[in-house]
Image (cartoon, rainbow, N blue to C red):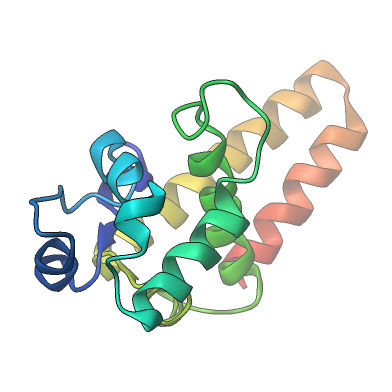
Length: 151
């Protein structure tokens, strides 16, 4: 299961009440993306929630794909966002706090920790394979990125 499947809309019930409909808790579920980013639904949300939803849309859903928002790019951008927060030295609890402040999203710190651990293991594998293949540049980049995540 991808980390984006474990990212939830904070204040889910309040938002569902404002929209006068039920919505899934998952921030990246197709139904949530469709409901939150239709103009008439966005207008029903309070100002703070509108701001966070618009920030989310600007930061993660800005692509020209015909299938947007179901093209996979929002999830890729969000994963990069999580890794960047870790590279800044934030731990799982702090990452969850920042996600909540920035976008009204929530995740369990254990899920974030597991994602970060898997990311480090993947980078270790990339580094080892690149060394075996003689791709020194890729091995260096993977090792450097891994180092940024584990400090």
